[in-house]
Length: 305
Ligand SMILES: [Zn+2]
Ligand SMILES: [Zn+2]
Figure 1 (tube, rainbow, N blue to C red):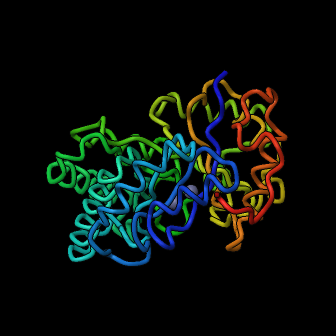
Figure 2 (figure 1 turned 90 degrees about the vertical axis):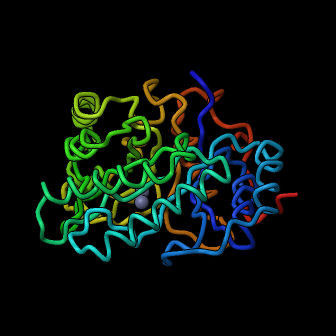
């Protein structure tokens, strides 16, 4: 089996490309980031010098995979026309930013229907994606990954069946795929703690969207119980999922080539990421698959250069 792509969500303080340095400083070979402040609708123009630095540094630092996460403000399912329009513009902007950095995947929370109902919300998301795709034909190689959600409130995407129904209504289906999140799927009711539960989830993924449609995993343990619909991330092995759930995914050959990224709580010094990645590496059956930078115990806070 191939080498794992392991990493974490990293800060872009100092420039988007700085996320690469942070990822490399802890020995990881994959990274997730925001291409701008994720709590704002719009960001500054793309910094061309930073884009050039990105293209030089990504191979130099041994980062093999990068994915961006769209703004938390975006709600393509909103029945409110003003919010919907703003969300369409914001996600089109996210795709253009990712495209500038040659980032091929943009994770997006599908949206919340806020009372209009599941059917209406799903149709609204697909309509939005169709318009965004038409407006960003130059970014056709950048794929939106609809994230599997915990299902809090009126949030859509808590089942792979719902994600399929969104994708079915999208015209350019090669421009939309799925990001799975261990905390979210567990809170949504998929029991990763047992072989039976994991097998049932895998069957459902295959049946509803197809395994190849899932392009990225978020690795978070869950503070919320199975089926609680509570979206609260915690450290690997310290939540309700436990080590077994991560062991199953890490060692399943069907996930070869799919990056697994932490979104667990952390401070600025990255010591928490170091610890969580070490825990994941301990769960890898074949040590040859551990990314080179993670094979020797890294030191928290060590300089990238
Ligand atoms: Zn997310
Ligand atoms: Zn996530």
